[in-house]
Amino acid sequence: MMSAEATVLAYWAACEARDWERFGTLLADDMVYDLPQTRERIHGRAAYLRFNQEYPGDWHVSVVRAVGDGRRAATLITVTVDGTPTPATTFFDLDESGLIQAITDFWPEPYDPPAGREHLVQRY
Image (cartoon, rainbow, N blue to C red; front, side, top):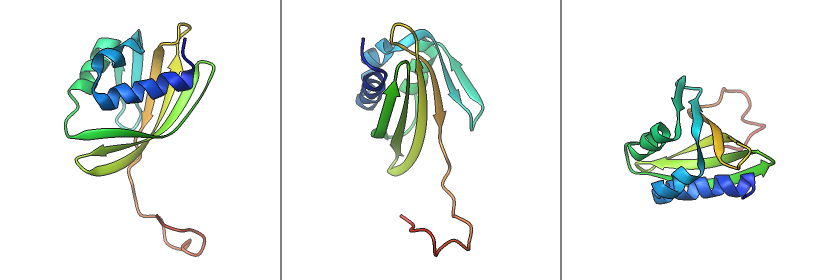
Protein backbone atom coordinates (compact mmCIF):
# COMPACT_ATOMS: atom_id res chain seq x y z
CA MET A 1 0.00 0.00 0.00
CA MET A 2 1.28 3.49 -0.89
CA SER A 3 1.63 6.27 1.66
CA ALA A 4 -1.09 8.91 1.74
CA GLU A 5 1.29 11.41 0.16
CA ALA A 6 2.26 9.00 -2.64
CA THR A 7 -1.42 8.24 -3.26
CA VAL A 8 -2.40 11.89 -3.74
CA LEU A 9 0.64 12.54 -5.94
CA ALA A 10 -0.42 9.57 -8.10
CA TYR A 11 -3.99 10.97 -8.13
CA TRP A 12 -2.86 14.36 -9.45
CA ALA A 13 -0.44 12.78 -11.96
CA ALA A 14 -3.24 10.59 -13.34
CA CYS A 15 -5.58 13.59 -13.44
CA GLU A 16 -3.09 15.72 -15.38
CA ALA A 17 -2.36 12.84 -17.78
CA ARG A 18 -6.10 12.20 -18.27
CA ASP A 19 -5.31 8.60 -17.33
CA TRP A 20 -8.85 7.92 -16.15
CA GLU A 21 -8.22 4.20 -15.68
CA ARG A 22 -5.35 4.85 -13.27
CA PHE A 23 -7.27 7.73 -11.67
CA GLY A 24 -10.21 5.43 -10.94
CA THR A 25 -8.02 2.78 -9.29
CA LEU A 26 -7.09 5.31 -6.59
CA LEU A 27 -10.71 5.97 -5.58
CA ALA A 28 -12.96 3.99 -3.24
CA ASP A 29 -16.27 2.93 -4.82
CA ASP A 30 -18.28 4.98 -2.31
CA MET A 31 -15.99 8.02 -2.24
CA VAL A 32 -17.39 11.51 -1.66
CA TYR A 33 -16.16 14.74 -3.26
CA ASP A 34 -17.10 18.09 -1.68
CA LEU A 35 -16.80 21.62 -3.08
CA PRO A 36 -17.68 23.95 -0.15
CA GLN A 37 -17.69 27.19 -2.18
CA THR A 38 -20.38 25.93 -4.56
CA ARG A 39 -22.04 23.64 -2.01
CA GLU A 40 -21.76 20.68 -4.41
CA ARG A 41 -21.22 17.05 -3.44
CA ILE A 42 -20.55 14.08 -5.68
CA HIS A 43 -21.14 10.54 -4.40
CA GLY A 44 -19.33 7.55 -5.87
CA ARG A 45 -16.35 6.77 -8.05
CA ALA A 46 -18.31 6.57 -11.33
CA ALA A 47 -19.91 10.01 -10.92
CA TYR A 48 -16.63 11.59 -9.84
CA LEU A 49 -14.77 10.07 -12.78
CA ARG A 50 -17.39 11.46 -15.16
CA PHE A 51 -17.22 14.88 -13.47
CA ASN A 52 -13.48 15.03 -14.19
CA GLN A 53 -13.70 13.54 -17.68
CA GLU A 54 -16.32 16.09 -18.70
CA TYR A 55 -14.74 19.14 -17.05
CA PRO A 56 -14.68 21.88 -19.72
CA GLY A 57 -11.73 23.87 -20.97
CA ASP A 58 -8.07 23.24 -21.49
CA TRP A 59 -7.06 22.62 -17.88
CA HIS A 60 -3.79 21.48 -16.33
CA VAL A 61 -2.79 20.61 -12.77
CA SER A 62 0.57 21.08 -11.11
CA VAL A 63 1.33 20.15 -7.52
CA VAL A 64 3.00 22.86 -5.47
CA ARG A 65 3.10 20.93 -2.20
CA ALA A 66 1.84 17.61 -0.87
CA VAL A 67 1.86 16.34 2.69
CA GLY A 68 0.42 13.19 4.18
CA ASP A 69 0.42 11.09 7.29
CA GLY A 70 -1.46 7.92 8.06
CA ARG A 71 -4.75 8.04 6.18
CA ARG A 72 -4.84 11.79 5.52
CA ALA A 73 -3.14 14.06 3.01
CA ALA A 74 -3.38 17.60 1.69
CA THR A 75 -2.16 19.30 -1.44
CA LEU A 76 -1.65 22.81 -2.65
CA ILE A 77 -2.04 22.80 -6.42
CA THR A 78 -2.21 25.24 -9.27
CA VAL A 79 -4.89 24.57 -11.84
CA THR A 80 -4.52 26.42 -15.11
CA VAL A 81 -7.72 26.68 -17.13
CA ASP A 82 -7.51 28.24 -20.56
CA GLY A 83 -4.24 29.93 -19.54
CA THR A 84 -5.41 31.32 -16.19
CA PRO A 85 -3.71 29.83 -13.08
CA THR A 86 -5.73 29.36 -9.89
CA PRO A 87 -4.45 27.97 -6.59
CA ALA A 88 -6.49 25.33 -4.78
CA THR A 89 -6.14 23.39 -1.57
CA THR A 90 -7.38 19.82 -1.41
CA PHE A 91 -7.82 17.57 1.62
CA PHE A 92 -7.95 13.79 1.23
CA ASP A 93 -9.07 10.99 3.54
CA LEU A 94 -8.09 7.44 2.65
CA ASP A 95 -9.92 4.28 3.66
CA GLU A 96 -8.30 1.33 5.45
CA SER A 97 -7.11 -0.14 2.14
CA GLY A 98 -5.41 3.09 1.04
CA LEU A 99 -8.04 4.23 -1.47
CA ILE A 100 -9.26 7.82 -1.52
CA GLN A 101 -12.52 7.88 0.44
CA ALA A 102 -13.19 11.62 0.73
CA ILE A 103 -11.95 14.74 -1.03
CA THR A 104 -12.65 18.35 -0.06
CA ASP A 105 -11.55 20.97 -2.60
CA PHE A 106 -11.18 24.66 -1.75
CA TRP A 107 -11.00 27.03 -4.73
CA PRO A 108 -10.36 30.55 -3.49
CA GLU A 109 -11.28 33.45 -5.68
CA PRO A 110 -8.50 36.04 -6.04
CA TYR A 111 -9.25 39.53 -4.76
CA ASP A 112 -7.43 42.78 -4.12
CA PRO A 113 -6.25 43.21 -0.54
CA PRO A 114 -7.62 46.01 1.60
CA ALA A 115 -5.70 49.28 1.70
CA GLY A 116 -3.45 50.21 4.58
CA ARG A 117 -1.06 47.30 4.83
CA GLU A 118 1.19 48.03 1.87
CA HIS A 119 4.08 48.77 4.25
CA LEU A 120 3.88 45.22 5.66
CA VAL A 121 3.46 43.06 2.57
CA GLN A 122 5.07 42.29 -0.74
CA ARG A 123 2.64 41.58 -3.59
CA TYR A 124 3.47 38.77 -6.01
